[in-house]
Length: 208
Image 1: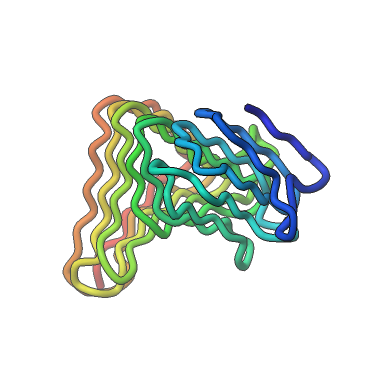
Image 2: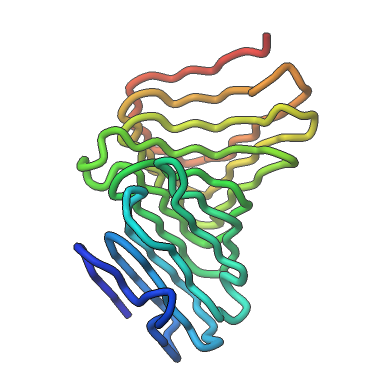
């Protein structure tokens, strides 16, 4: 199922759009997204929106897969919480950045803060804070940033980052950055055995 409101909202907080018996959902909206999936077991989810939009993003009553899904707008970012599904998850930031604040475990993953070249300032940020962060795609990952792609280990011991995929296609408009936020003991594990990457510049900042 595909729902599109390129200049408006899909549903509203007071009247979410109710959907039943769909396993694959693609939603694109400039502003608010409010959906009630009526305890549907969703397998594939695709979202396209911008950090500059108004209103919240809520996809409620998902059974099993994507349970507890969270995506919020904050300070120019689309903040993504944990995502788990045996299927696919695609997120496109039409403007602003994608900041991964939860673990991801899916079949195929797309984190796109480039939007076919229309988002030239978009960053993708994978951040460990308050514990380790794991991003895993058993199949393919598609990682696109109009500006920087950042993998950031946190400030405390154990704030480690793991990024794994069977195949990765990546485009980074500016810097690909791997950085520790402080002098704490940390590790960043990249397991991308088959990779096609277009990068302007790679930066690996050492510990102080």
